[in-house]
Length: 117
Image (cartoon, rainbow, N blue to C red; front, side, top):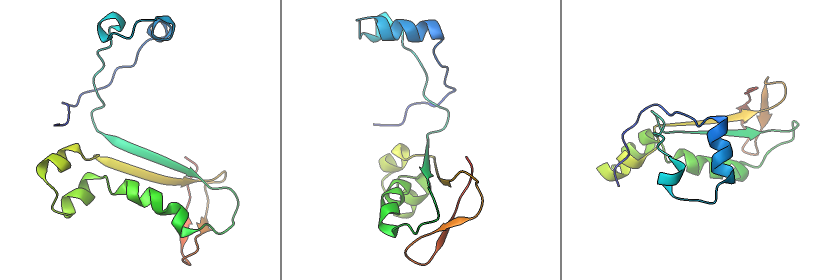
């Protein structure tokens, strides 16, 4: 299935949200749902880090697998054109803590930088 044409997303008003949540109809026609997809497909992941305890590298492995869905990574493995069309344009993984300063230790002996947002 090819990617949908990308354009700006418009969000429903509060009145529309109230109607969506209170109506018993699930028909797209009845709900008048015609929202365009985002102009760029993106995936943003925030990992909240508490304290300065060492984190197991294997705990972060699932995030690395999600990062494989990016268009840059998929195109490097000589994937089909259909797979590249379905790939996510941008993947942003951030490690977040309260102060946003410094880094936290990982069992491989490395340190991961953190941010506040």
